[in-house]
Length: 340
Image 1: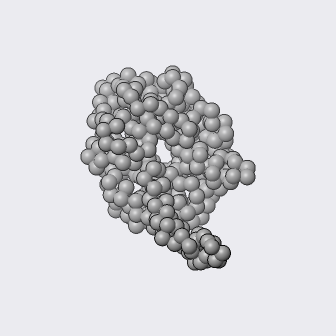
Image 2: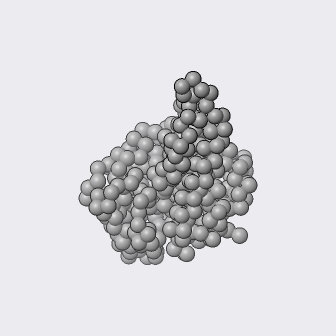
Image 3: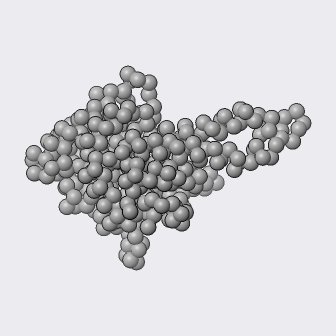
C-alpha cells in the first residue's frame, strides 16, 4: 500500500504528532523528481508526502496545452503505479492554490476524488491546500469552510494557510515584515470557523516568520515557539490539548534548532522545494560545464551522445535530490519511522 489510504494518512499524521516528528513534503514537477523523492524516502526508511503546486501541475500538463488538472491527475496516476516499487508509504498532496486558481485546480480535483469515492475507490489525492493568505481572514475562512466540507465528503484532508508567508510561491508573494506572525486571535477565529476535527480534518499553515525560498542569515526571523502560544491559546478555550496539526512552510534553509522547536510544538509536515530544486539542478550544471564539448556540437564536431543523453545527467540529478530528501528526513526525525 505505497499510496496511503485515507485511514493510513490519518494514522501517519497521528504518529508524527505523538512522536514529535514531521514528514518532508517534497514538491515535484516531473516523473523524475517524483522518483527522486520516493527514492529519498525509501533510503531513509521514512514515509512522506509528495506535493504538486499549481505551477508544477501546469508544467506537468505540458507546454502545448497548459492544464493544471491534467498535470496533477497524470502525475498522481503515475505515482500510484511506480510507488508500488518503493517500500514506504506516501500521501499525495496539492500545494499552494490561491483564490483565482481554485476553479481550475482544487475544486475540479475534489470532484475527481468525490467521483472515485462514490464508486468505492480511494480519493486520488489525500490532501489539498487552500492558500487564502492574500485574502482577509474572514473571506479566507469562509472559503475554507466550503472546501473543508467538500474535502471531508471525499475523505480528503484540507490544508489551510490563514496568514501570509513571506517570499514568493508560484506567483503569490508577500513582503517580509511583522505581519508574518499568526496571532492567538487568528487561531481562535480559525477554530471557530473550521472546528477542531468535527467538521473534517485540516492541517494549519500558521505563520511564524516563514519565508518561501532561501534568504541570507539575518533577513528572516523565525519564531517557532509562537506555535506553542497558538496551541495553548486555543486549548484554553476549547479544552483540547495541542489542537492543531501544523505545517512548516518555507522550510528550505532553516536551522536544525528552528526545526526542532517547531516539531515540539505540533508541526507534522514541512514543505521542501527550493533546496530540492537546487539539489536536482546542481549536478546537471556540473555535468554540462565539465562536458561542454560533449553535450554541444562545437566547431563542426558531432558531440558525444553518451554525455548529452538525458539519462546520463538525469541519473545524477535524481541521486542528488534523493540525498537531500534523506537529509530532510533526518532533520525532521522521520528517518526509520515508516509504517511496518
